[in-house]
Each structure stands twice: as C-alpha cells, then as structure tokens.
Length: 261
Ligand SMILES: O=C(O)CCC(=O)C(=O)O
Image 1 (cartoon, rainbow, N blue to C red):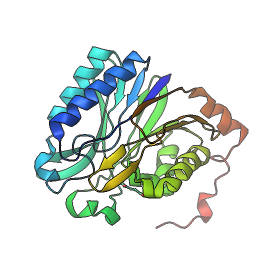
Image 2: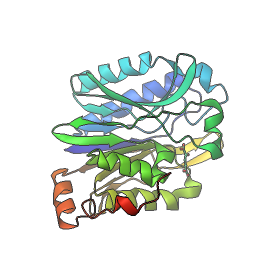
Image 3: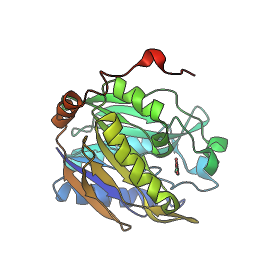
Image 4: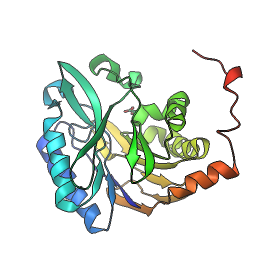
C-alpha cells in the first residue's frame, strides 16, 4: 500500500486558492504513484482565520464533491485531512474519507479541541471515534491535538485500528512533541501511523511540516522536512498483527486496575 502524506503551505482564509492547491497536490501524489493520499488539517481555511465560520464549508458539500471528483479523476483513495464545516449552525473540524471510486466512506469531527488556540470557543467538538475498513484492514483517524490523548488513541486501538491517520496543523514551536508523539503512538498502539502536517506560515503561526509515515515497530519509513512535499512510503499493514503477536501489549493489559474517569 503506497501512502502519500501531502504537506503544503495552506493560505489563511484563502478558500478558493486552497481547494486549487489541494487538487494540484492530489494530482501530484497520484502521478508519483500513490494509492492512498492523505491531506493535512483545516486545508480549506488554515488554522484558523477570525471569520472561519463564514468561510466554512456548508454541510461539507463542496469538500465531499471535491474529494469524490479528485478520487475518481486520479484513481486514488483519499483521507481528506480536515476542513472547517458548518452543520445545523455549528462549526466543526471535519475529516472525510472517500474511496478510489469516489464513494463517501466515513467522516470524523475532531473530539479534542485545542483550547490553547481557542478552538473550543468557536468550534463544536465531535463525540465519536472514527474507524473503518480499508482494503481488509481497520483504519482510524484523529486530528492534531487528539494525538495528545492516549485514552482516545487506545479507544481506536481497542476498536481494531491497525493504521491511524493523523492530519494536523502542528506548530514548529512544538516540533519535538510532534516527532515524539507520532512515533510513540506507533509503538504504543502498535499500528502504522500516517501523520500529515501543514508547513510554512499560517497567519502568525509557523507550522512544523515533518509529516511522517511510521511502522508499528516505530521505524520512520518516510519523513518530510520544513518544505511542501509529497512524503511517500510503502506501508505493510499486515506487520501490525505480527508486532502485536511478538509483543502482546494489548493482551497483557490490566483494565481492572486502571483508573477510570
Ligand atoms: O497540541 C499541539 O501542540 C498542537 C495542537 C494544534 O495545533 C491543533 O490541534 O490544531
């Protein structure tokens, strides 16, 4: 499975330009031989302009149409990062997934809103985990700040997740955390991690880039730098079962002694 994590400099509030850029990047990743293309967080508005609610995709219609059309045109499966969407008067940070035929597969609203960035003042939080079937494997997704919540990651693992997609808009100021958490996630959840970050300047925030594809043993298969790029690797999801057998962490859990709450 050839996976492409696409990182580029998303323009703050420039929605039309950002859709055009997303189209160019999906086309490039497909040309480079990708089978699955993964986009970063909030690629329609960037993270996030003051008028994000006005700029958000109403009912996600434009984004779904765009992803479905791109998937069909370029013949790729797309984990569509996330976009700002408005549904029933509420603003969400939403991820959409479409298959190679352009069929809608699933969607996810970011659960842990980034309070430090005041995301919770404007956006509404999702409540449901996102896990689905991808070519005979179980895939899952979280968005950016969600990565800091081990209970949430474990929730997905216990739902069978073998490959985890993590679109993000992670600042360069906390690049150390990004590298650590993405890799630790692969080791602790024993899954393939595809972590896709924005890069360059987003308003006054400098994004870290360094999108990475990591195997369940913690080996970094591919990693980007600061610049816009298609970061590509062949991932062997079947390795997940082998690693879980070799190091039976999930079987060795002791939930009866863990604190709940
Ligand atoms: O957790 C972090 O350091 C970054 C989180 C963030 O920027 C986000 O969730 O959009």
